[in-house]
Structures are given as structure tokens and as C-alpha cells.
Image 1 (cartoon, rainbow, N blue to C red):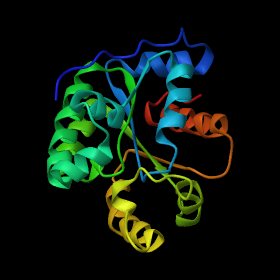
Image 2: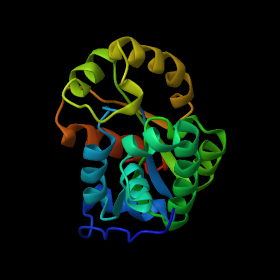
Image 3: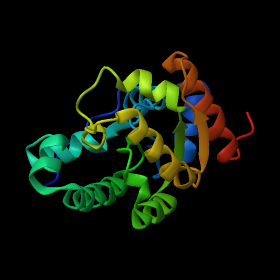
Image 4: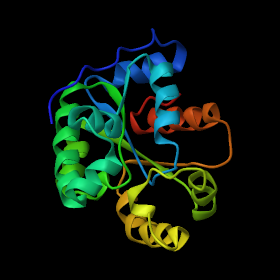
Amino acid sequence: MADTARPRPQGAPTGDAAVVAAALERRSIVLVGMMGAGKSSVGRRLANRLGIAFVDADAEIEQAAGMSIAEIFAAHGEPYFRAGEARVIARLLEHGPQVLATGGGAFMNAQTRDLIRLKAISVWLKAELEVLTRRLRRRNDRPLLNTADPVTTLADLLMTRDPVYGEADLTVISRDASHDVIVEEILTALRGSLGLGM
């Protein structure tokens, strides 16, 4: 999978966000969590607040492969996709600071988790099954949910993944609140993690 152009930051941060952005130095903020947790939509707003780039790992994978994730799964299978995903995330982590939204399964890779610990601050956007089910009901582009009983499949994925997501540096609850509220909660958690004491 080849390199792709990275989006530019939207503007200079102000206030507390500027202090957080400066404290990151070259570290990225990596959003982890289940599909439907809001990593991309929240991540874009968070990056705008911090004045740093937003990168969606899934979009980077699709652009590099020239096909959708569903097509990659269908043509090559999940192991092939996961190997490419790990390579792309490793490459992206060389280019901080940025807000990086990862796919739901990316953090399950132990090497990827180790790299994220080394080069980033990870934030788990934790969402309950009911919230995820409601959000994902409108989507049909999730290969892992193409089953006879997608809700049970989702519940099984949560049971497997939640303990691993729990290894993230920070946890913020994704729920039916505005994205701006979630962004503020992430910024508050980052200030505490970075020892800024605001």
C-alpha cells in the first residue's frame, strides 16, 4: 500500500487547545474503539480544535489499495486486510502530531498497540451496544457485520475487544451527546494526561 497525501491542519488553535497541541510535540492522538463509536466525526472536530491534521486510517487504506474495505475483505480476506492496516498505521504514526482515527480492529494488533504507546496518546471512545446498534443499523458497509444476526455479532465483538480497548491511555464515553461535548471531554482528559492542570 503506497503513501498518500496527508490533509493539512485547518487553522491555529486557541486557548486551552493551543496548550494541549503544544504539549503533544510530535505525538499523535489515536482514537480507538468499535465501529460506530464516532472516531471519524469526533476526530475531525478534535483535530480542528487543536489545529493539527486529521487522518482516517480506513480512508488511507482504501486510497492506497484502490478499493473499499468491503472489497478488500471480499477479495483477500481479513488477515490480508489486517496486515495492510498495521503497515499503514505504522507509517502514519511517523507523521505526528495528528489525530488518527483507527478502524475497530486495529488496536487488537499487539504490535500496533506497542507503536501507539510509543508515538501517541490513545483515546478509547467507549460506546454501549445499544448506541452502536442504533448508529450502525443505517449502514451496510461493515464486513464483519454481514451475518445473519449482526447485533449478536456486534455484542460478541464488544466482549472480545473491550478489554483490549481498555488498555488505551484515556477513555471517553461516546453517547448521544453532541460531538463538540465529546471533543471537550477528550481535551479535558488530554490536559490531565499531559499534566497541564487546567
